[in-house]
Length: 293
Ligand SMILES: Nc1ncnc2c1ncn2[C@@H]1O[C@H](COP(=O)(O)OP(=O)(O)OP(=O)(O)O)[C@@H](O)[C@H]1O
Image (cartoon, protein in one colour):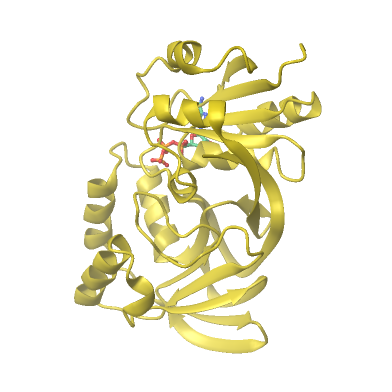
């Protein structure tokens, strides 16, 4: 490698509505080549990006950029936890929760300018049953929606809201026992979300006051709701008012344990991960370097 800092771009060619955009041409045109050397690699399969990111970090690469949605960001960031290599993001998904939380431009050209002119800071990451997450994880209805969304070719906020409204009527609430800061909760659960960032993506704010550098998870518990309350909850999420709506309870903590009678679905950063009866959710404070405006 030359003396210039090196950026590796990891592109998920399958992600998001902008999958036809010629990312390599945009990088060629807008990256500051006086400042950086770079290489571009394309993932060939799910689970490829952590390997490509780790390899770059081991070679001393300064920045590894995830070009994709939150699933790709998750995979790249996983390979960079506790290394000196910073994560950059060129948002190309439909939700882009971490990019939005970090106030990155959604346009590729603007996001490339952040690489040219931005600075490096350090953020927390979370872990649910051994799976890292950077934006949110959750059990219950949000995980159920992730599982349905995964098999759906259509993307975007409208598809998401339509899916939520269709599925909420038939969703069965399950009882959970949770231990948070020594407090024991025994309740029906519609959603228990573990937020590192404030939003799921698409500016849907599940934990509006979440601070990504405070070393704490914001746990958002929605106990039980019917269709009308679900409509209200969706509206409050999109207007950043969920915390004042009375529909959700919040806890700040470093560690949560949850037990369920029946196996419940869970997700990390919107990727459906299957079912479990016990969940161990932890924060890894200031564990990831990121490039921000
Ligand atoms: N080359 C590839 N072929 C198929 N799947 C891939 C490939 N590279 C990465 N993936 C998988 O694609 C998944 C989805 O990626 P990502 O979230 O970035 O895109 P998206 O689903 O279109 O965006 P969004 O979640 O914002 O709608 C990732 O979890 C990753 O495992």
